[in-house]
Length: 338
Image 1 (cartoon, rainbow, N blue to C red):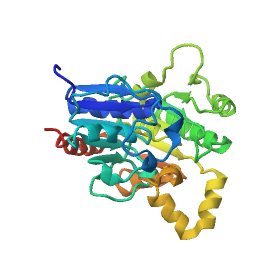
Image 2: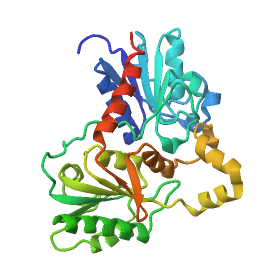
Image 3: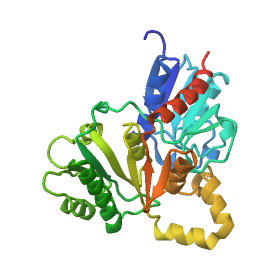
Image 4: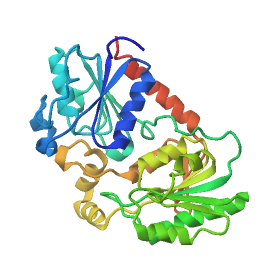
């Protein structure tokens, strides 16, 4: 594509977030430019105080100069002030599309693409996606029946903490499905997996099964193993991991991740007010609740894409439904461009 990019993508240090923004820009099929932002000490200041400014940046990228874009795509909280600054410099012409939760008034954006774990309040410019916007899988899923059942072990987060019980449930589900299909199990861990839990999963691998711990010597086989999986079993601590698995078009089992005790105690003590905060308080700046993976899993059930059995969530192949949802969202984004 030639000509000045009409779409700018603002990215920060979180690679998962940046991948979503890049994927959305690429799906639009228009010229686009990525502008990495380096944030300084004011990066944690509330967006309501930062306004439309660059004061939270460590330095101003040279690319933040006219001609101003038709559309800015951003993700998360920290890029919001810079996006608003760009729109102000354009005389209000630049449209803003945001992914995730901006922790700023939704009315400031032309469109927001979010997912249920963020608990954003309902709005006419909000599209609630079933799963995060997903770039095409680096290794396309194989067209055959699959060569193994893949177990994907995540790790601890702000709101959840995995323990031995979740590892055992993951291994039991993966081994059970593998043996039922007459296949071996393959298992991988993530950057957040505690070493003790990785070792526990490895101990539950049998003869002929394969195991790779994140960071171990050699190339990480996760993408290839995902593409060749007949079924996938994941822990429910990561929306991205669940999304990658679902986009393979294979059956998926999700082992729920328990919330941390402090969060359970807070919600129990706070009663109805705490439940409202958890369900619709995701855009409250510094007072926002942590992501609610339980809400994302429940939305899969409500939308008819998953069912619960034996304490786990089971997704039938649902890629066509995800693709239809994605096309509809993309049409609304594209309609913002001249």
